[in-house]
Length: 428
Image (cartoon, rainbow, N blue to C red; front, side, top):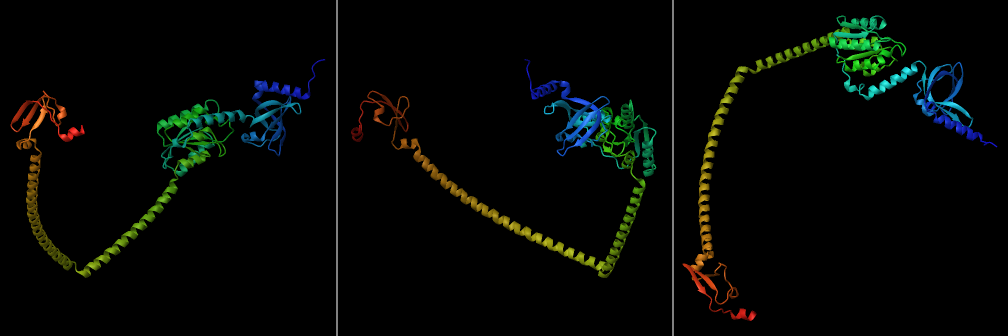
């Protein structure tokens, strides 16, 4: 009889076959959403179908972070996931890890990949953002030569500043070669020397705006020495150019308002400031005039001539007092110096006498310690033939030659007898 397997064993075997298939581990599938149900647990259960078949799908709650839209029946979607077997029911299904709306899905994947790459390179770092000049004289615009975007930029810019110079680079903003055209326009306007560059276009689908999601456009904006304002699509549209640009404007019209100062508003503010300044200066001048009149009146009452004469007299007396005080100070200083000189002489004489007296004492002490003095008093100094001092009888023996030093010379003698003191002999 052939081997018999349980349902569980067969389902497990089939599941292992699905698991070992590399293609089924990570697969993109597209189709129409049907039977879509949001479970209370947070999981989404749905089917993906096309004209020839249907497959069951599930997206667990843990994977819903990347779902950027609400799923509904009838939507065309692109699903990334793995296909495996649910052993309990013996059915296979697609376990979704990411779901994108079809059409925009692949472009969105490309957008996210390039965004992550450029962000890692530091091209979005605020440290590289250049400030927009407050007063722009030459405005560069990179956009299509026709359409609402360029008309809005020109109209709003000239309304805000009638004297502004607008240099338009007519670029392709959609289709093949659009990214290259936008990048070239940014580089040419940068070399021309405009104050600010607005790069953008009107709204559209993600495919229409794709020229501003290309790496070539991003690098042209990042390398531009002139500040660049990105103005692509509507307020809800976001492109790679928005992240790289020095400033993002929600629309081309907003870009013109951000780039060009409103001259009429500035003129009004200048007029108000001028009026306030004139009023402040007028008040200040009047205050000074009032102060001057008050001081003139005080001077006329005090009699300036007599006051000056009195001040001169006080100055003369002060000079005389100062001269007399200086003479007294000099005389007192001379007396103090003479007293100090005499005192110093007395101290030096006393010091000299003390020094001579101590010197005599030291001389007498040195004489008492001098060997020559001892020899002159009848003492002698005994040594062996090698010059070693002899202080004990044990250092010589009979027949040895010794030297005896006296005050006027040296005697050489031979030891004929050795006698020790009785005290020393007893100790030995």
